[in-house]
Image (cartoon, rainbow, N blue to C red; front, side, top):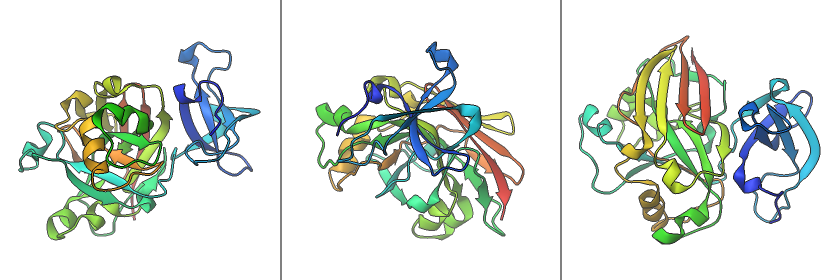
Length: 277
């Protein structure tokens, strides 16, 4: 696959401009000190679609003139790691898992920045969980530890929304974790972080401006390399697959009218309003 120069060292976003179909682009922020502050340069194709050439089209938009969408819609799967932070498992009343404890979320649970998280009718006990999400960039199976960096396309923010009543009552978590709107993702994919950098990022979740989670990705029980190796040992990972790496302690309820913001160093801020069904 051919890519623009430094495409793998940028923020990749999916966006909608007025009157146009969703497209992909690279974001340049004012803090970068570049020639085109707070703009998005349009790409010809989805950079995670294997076998398709990706180039710049020459078109550029100001960020204020577009709507950022979920930066990807996984073609295959979203895999979450449960109780994967020191302290989080304890506050849930459980133990730290000796090996990664995993669950699946369907791709239909994905929503993007500023899209509403919908509280299911009659079920108020809806929790936020701010997380670093790994974006897989190539087909892989049984990845050795020394090659994990080769299969990671980048990192983004996810909110692993969880309905706790369903989680307690159901033997499987597909309803509690996988309902529509239960996986906000965005605002973009950062492709230039090393595994070491991604393993030491501050994670803060705010609900209507109140800080509810304040942790660091260094608090993972099973780190990025461990998760990719373990998951790929039994299932094939495909480009665009997401791995949710777990959440720090401090998860809690979201209510109608709240705005939930997950801010992670280097990855931006993912903001979503909460609305009753």
